[in-house]
Image (cartoon, rainbow, N blue to C red; front, side, top):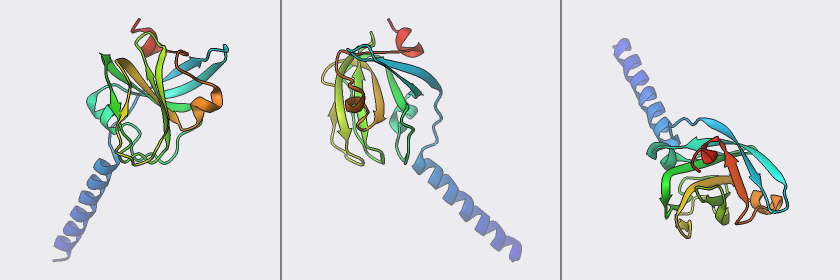
Length: 157
């Protein structure tokens, strides 16, 4: 009887941990350095996580409570296309930089609202989305037309 109770308790604990892990996201992300050069010639360096497949792109930065000032996430959609994003289950306010395959910034959505399910559009076909902490683009003077380079973006030219 005691063994059965211990087994049931362990099973309950394990199922709770599995549910928590799936709710919090279980994807892992490789990283790479990335540089943004603004129109004034200033270079801004980041270390970004790479969201390359459907699972990674769907999870993105959901549930994250903090992100370093020099960090971000780069979504690669594999081909140029219209992209829509949202902030469901995303705790951090974000800037979203919509980037062409050649590394030029096409559009910036500033200060995306946490948990919002409002659709955020790329406003035309793009290849990448870079998510940074909200306010980063304005603080660093990053604008449409500025250039982004990384191993992944350089390899798409």
